[in-house]
Length: 193
Image (tube, rainbow, N blue to C red; front, top):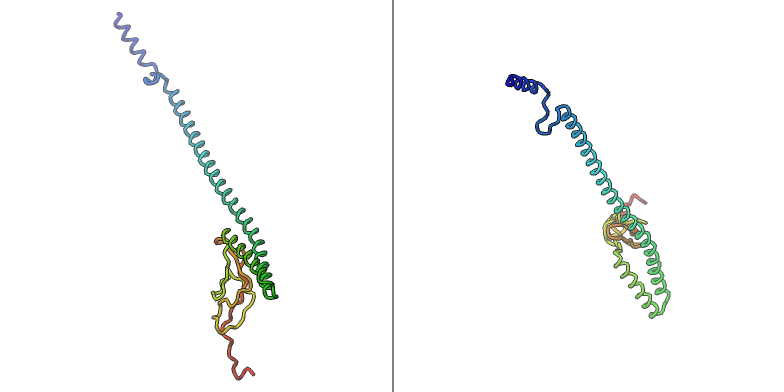
């Protein structure tokens, strides 16, 4: 009789819901944990995406800050150099006028040395002079203040530089003011009289 009772117990234990043999957790709890894990993985992916976007935004802001800072620096340098160039031009014109009016040679030499130092300083700062005499007119670098007929200079070329232009690297500080040739004087026909 004991054997029959053991068999009955085995059959009853088989009919009861089985626990997950690996974790001893009932099946419905496993599904709940799997859903929770999937939810946490999605949340982790979302947070990682937010982190990557925030890092990219920070990198872009840093690059924009550096670019804006460099732009401000160049703008300030251009403004200051523009004023210095005006003083340089006035000094050159003053020296030319003084020499023409009979300034003593010693004073003229001294002023010429100062002017040369001025040029060297501008060169060290990267300021280059634009002296386009004999070159084709370039509206990006030159400002035409006048035109004239000229037999020796082709049409569209610079005849005379009224005021030198200046650039700092590839940035134009001031265009050169120039007189542009219209070419040869047209010949008058006998019918024009």
